[in-house]
Image (cartoon, rainbow, N blue to C red):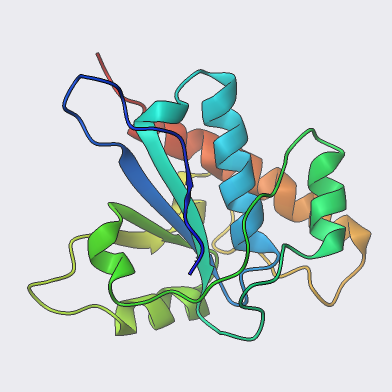
Length: 172
């Protein structure tokens, strides 16, 4: 299993970072892009130490691989790095992370199927519920489409991740 993209926890204040896990099907397009977008946003605002960020897939087909080259290219065009390697979500992730955000209904069902009554502590829900500009229910999978699909996904993720950061932004 790869380590989450973490920045050290806030020094000396006794608080642990807010942990966020982004989930899609194979963990090579949408969820690593969401991870990269969120890391970019918190880095730009100097909030890196306040968060622990990772991504995972509900399937295991691409475990160990970097993000799809087309998604890495589209993200790089926006100055966003995608550092993660694919991994599969586990039931333990639902106790390790505060927030588990899915890209579509299928991923949401798969994640909810991993929940363990009385043990699951993560808040599980669709990432698109944090969109402010776009009115969508899912982040479409661009894997089988053209390059414009990767740009569309990044547009949606930038919107949703900015909305998520508004909600999770540490106060103080």
